[in-house]
Amino acid sequence: QVQLVESGGGLVQAGGSLRLSCAASGRTFSTYTMAWFRQAPGKEREFVAAITSNGDNTYYGDSVKGRLTISRDNAKNTLYLQMIVLKPEDTAVYYCAAKRIGISFYSRDNYVYWGQGTQVTVSS
Image (cartoon, rainbow, N blue to C red):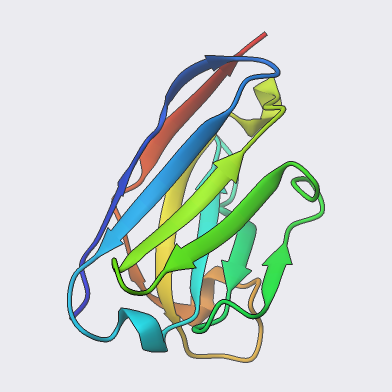
């Protein structure tokens, strides 16, 4: 069992920046593909970014390319999401996910473990 705890969310003005963190328990963090998803009110949970276990490969949703950067520190069991040039449409609860079990990096159904989420609100 892996526990994931997100932090770093908050209220920010459009054009601002935030860095989200996801702290993972256990010794298996470094073996898992990790990902960020987000869910806005009334919408489906949306893929944001994913990173392979060694950090060599990253994948992004089309709406965040160039503005959000996923990274990880396996020594600290921590996943990050650096967000810049934030827009009101980035407002959502951001979730950390671990352990991909299917081929697609983009499908929420392919991740086993989830955090509780952290709220990001971008004001215009």
